[in-house]
Amino acid sequence: MSYLVCKFGGTSVATASALTQIKKILDLDTRRKILVLSAPGLSSGIVTKVTDHLITIAEKTLKNKDVRRDVGAVKKRFITNYTELGLSEEVILEVLSELDVRITQNKEHPEKLRDSIVACGEEFNANLFSQYLNLCDTPAEFVCPQSIGLRVSSVYGDAQPTEEGMKNLEEIAAIADSGKVVVFPGFYGIAEDGSVATFSRGGSDLTGALIAEAIGAIEYENWTDVNGILSANPKVVSDPEQIPALTYKEMRELSYMGFNVFHEEAVKPVTEKKIPIRLRNTNNLSNPGTLIVSDRLPDERDVIGIAAASGFCLFNIQKYLMNREKGFGRRTLQIFEELGLSYEHSPSGVDDLSVVLDQNQLQPGTVNSIIRKIEDELSPDSIRTEFGLSLIVVVGEGLLHKIGVLAAAAQAFADAGININIVNQGSSEISIIFGIDSADEDKAVRVLYDSFFNDDTDDE
Ligand code: ASP
Image (cartoon, rainbow, N blue to C red; front, side, top):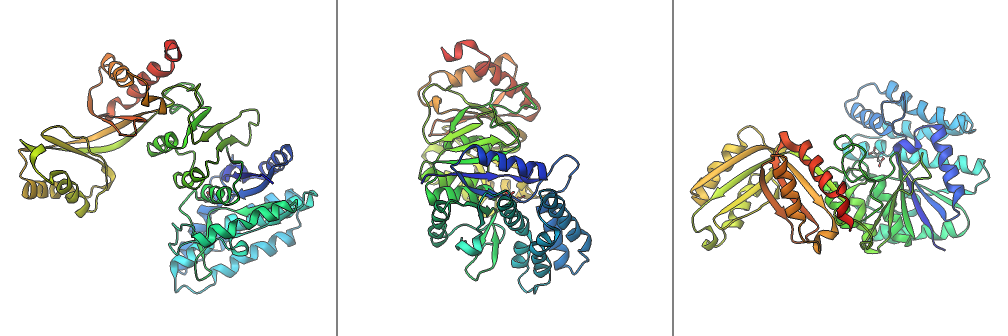
């Protein structure tokens, strides 16, 4: 049979009423047979995520500090939610007792201890939710990385699935075929030696994507507390349009620039089998959400989103006849590599090359080291630096065939008196990036939005 894999994020599992809403969502579509749950997150009056409590517990445990209050806070969240849903306190405490076991394990491998504690939020939640479903006469089974064999690499805190793990996940379809709802904890897998290893933060999205890929789901529903992806930041543009559908590549471009609705790593598994991802709002079922697909739908806008991020700097290197000097680009980038710096972009001209970096990487003295090395190894005519840059990106697969997007953006900037420091159109041609002074960032996003979304002639 074909199933929808449904992942529910932290706010969607934060309270008893949020959990009953999941049950309602399940009942609306019988294909929703595979659930992936996060740990309870934030809600009104709840200011700490269970995962954050667990991180504190792990850190304190490693330092032999008293964790009773933190453990109490975690247990209280589960007891409050699940007693309200009708589970007995005894049953809940039995599940939660595993936390006491994990904090007393040996501290020889701090990263293993940490991950095994941090993953408890997801593990307990999925276990207890499956019991709640059974209580409601919805046959359900708690299936977890330990029981199914979701094998991952032994990179604690940033694990990746192995081939064997992916193969084992295929078994989930057979459990769903038996008519049961599978309730699976997100965020972690099992390393080679059987220890718990978590993905990076927000990694339950990845779990959902892996299961969707393994069982060839018809769609991967990712339920959160927002309607979907908006075409611009609503704190900057008033009432921006919701994006009805976008491609995986467009999603990647937007998330690179801070659209953090969905974990970046979770896109890759579903792209291979072209499984659509649908972002949905648990509390607004009438909104169809945003669909992320492999191919562009023909009736959409050319530009689907505008994003911005600040905190970049630029090193511009000038040297006469640079274009004839073999290896100049490689040696330039090597300098950054040797200093342990990653670069974002590297636009170039005939006799000049710029390297754009995330400024957060710079330590005191890094700038001088970069300049000294460039002078020593490349003998440039000049080096210019700029700090406090913002990158603004215009994204859309439509840029491939549309003439004049760059011209329209440049005109919008010129009309607003915004100076463009750099322009970079990647060879995939689905985005154009502008580097401007950070002081102009919000204004730049607004004028671009007006140009591409509020212009009635755009769709003609
Ligand atoms: N609970 C984990 C976190 O807060 C994983 C997740 O929710 O996706 O990062």
